[in-house]
Image 1 (spheres, rainbow, N blue to C red):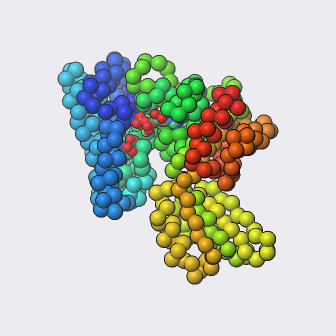
Image 2 (cartoon, rainbow, N blue to C red):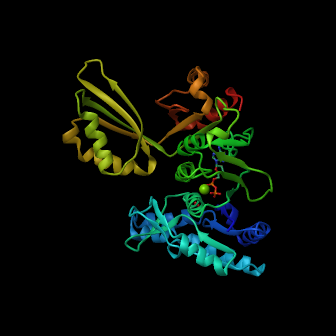
Image 3 (tube, rainbow, N blue to C red):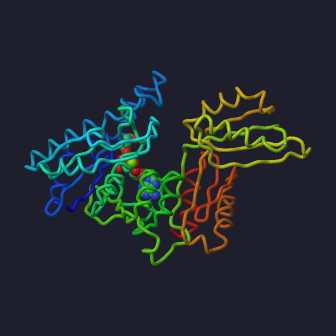
Length: 401
Ligand code: ADP
Ligand code: ASP
Ligand code: MG
């Protein structure tokens, strides 16, 4: 059986007119294939649900995931109705009806297993399955969500499980660009990107693809196409590095305003102190990204700075404050007004001077660097949030993107 997976994001499904248009796009692909359409909630809906939950300080729980995943129920029902109006045999399904089995962790569940046999059964009477993205069910029978933006991951997971012929991610831009086209009008669509580059772009803030979806595509060697639901143009292919003829030194610039900086000053400069701090972070499931340690002049005390996700700000503060006696520090400072800017490119592995160019460009714009981290194909810097736009634009220009 030829199967195609098509995923439509929040902006693409926002409103009945758009859903009717998607039904037509799906119909045009039906001739030789069965189709699984994965959809998000309408744009803004999941944020609205998140706001309700915030009023009850409700997070990472049975309740929060039950509420957060409810927006998708509306879109699968409406899209399936639109398809039926076009004479197409379609069935709307929630994650648990497949089922998509996940682990226990609420709000960031990982998919463990997908029942292929049931998908085949659904296809015996239907040509299209309209599947709710971003959700699953754990072994305890509780609804879970895959983390914000997780519908991409549902699409890639299901496409990998059924060995789909194609996995197309339809969104509100024409593909993956050299930087966010909504902040830099000169950004260009990239025709092809390796999994590694896309992974770095997603994990440093380019929300066009959920990071986990890229990891899964890479693991299963599944080629993805990111394209617009509004135009019929070819989008960006995310694929195996071996299929790339030319490796750009810098393929893209990404940014994230979701960071918070934590500085612990006046800790003792002795073995084991970092292990204690980061052990506390691990115990509390707080992800740490960049780390900088400075030894002070007296050789006795040190300062440590690291970054976390902004949503972990309050938890981090209380965890460190509660451990003041153990860590024995002088002061603790948290700052949400920071941004991480990253440049990414496969060619960086064999080229020198990329970092120097980045630092020089930032200096020319009087932007101070607060922290640095690198990988083989990425350089990230932490800066003051107010400089985000100018940093992205000037780096985009200096690397000729
Ligand atoms: P969807 O609702 O379809 O899942 P998202 O809002 O999650 O869409 O992702 C698309 C958005 O990603 C774009 O509107 C764009 O602002 C943003 N984006 C950030 N970086 C990039 C990039 N490098 N290329 C394309 N889009 C990007
Ligand atoms: N509706 C969910 C969100 O807004 C999932 C998604 O759009 O991918 O995060
Ligand atoms: Mg998205």
